[in-house]
Length: 295
Image 1 (spheres, rainbow, N blue to C red):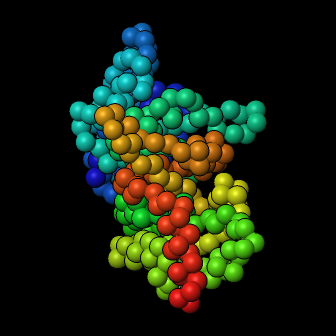
Image 2 (spheres, rainbow, N blue to C red; image 1 turned 30 degrees about the vertical axis):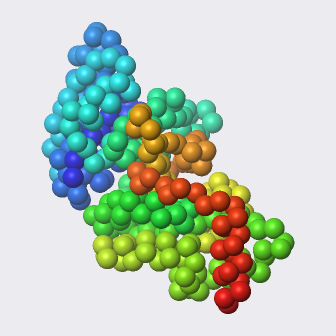
């Protein structure tokens, strides 16, 4: 595995260095420490800072290559990931101090949308990575992200929770939804949701990763953070899919953006496969009716 850790040489970048080291060591990853200076006069201070940051990685058994680039940071990260194929890119978030939150700049979102590798946003200080939660949405196209998360979890000895949040249903569908409230029943069912979650859990089982499936009801973003608090997770994983068409950028939905804005733990924005064409409303209704009739 190849990991790119990005730094501007400031103390706030140390969270990205530390988080990258937590993964790069157990993964025995080939690691590059990319320093970016927007002005040429910042080169010497940047190189000195990178030397210190690289030393902290070596203490974790990681020997990084140091690369220094000049110019607009997003463009430099795009160019670096285009020149060399990376499996993961780690970027930092700045501590605001006054309100106790981390600040995600516009550049954070631009990097996530512009580059191909998964992006790990270093939020908060982590001494270990032992509990991951994946916001699956119960969709098939998220399986690529689940598999990547499983590889990271296997390396660091972490457990993974697959979280699916169901919106509160209209009263007329309440009985149908209750059939899927029990996790065991859901995983044994032939429903699309049950089939997808069952396949995702089996992939984690195959990788030797302790895995659970949790279901919640309500507003998705609120339930994600209730789960995050209740589970005391070290990492939240969400997915993005690649846009169709000429420009192969990644789509960052409102949920991913909200998670990044509100999280106080690291967030992995993993890459999902292209979603299948959406069913029409009529087809979806017919599927629900046939499932009800068949039970």
